Length: 90
Image (cartoon, rainbow, N blue to C red; front, side):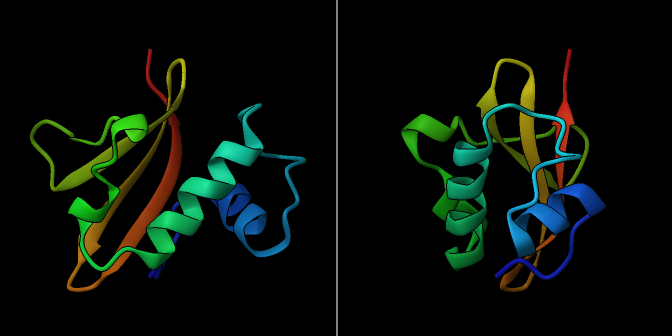
């Protein structure tokens, strides 16, 4: 389950579907990723071929691919995703 977000825009999108301040064009893909992350019982549940799941170097964070440079990043605390964010890596 997602316990916390780092991004208010992403949190608002998850709660209401409001994509006005979301910094990505692929809102349907983002929605599907957030649903999968909310259902995940462990971080490895996000290790699906089309998500390109990976650990971020030097951190205890993980990332999944949205499109181009966009990633959804998250930490993991016990059974919950924490500090979920949408990042642009270039």
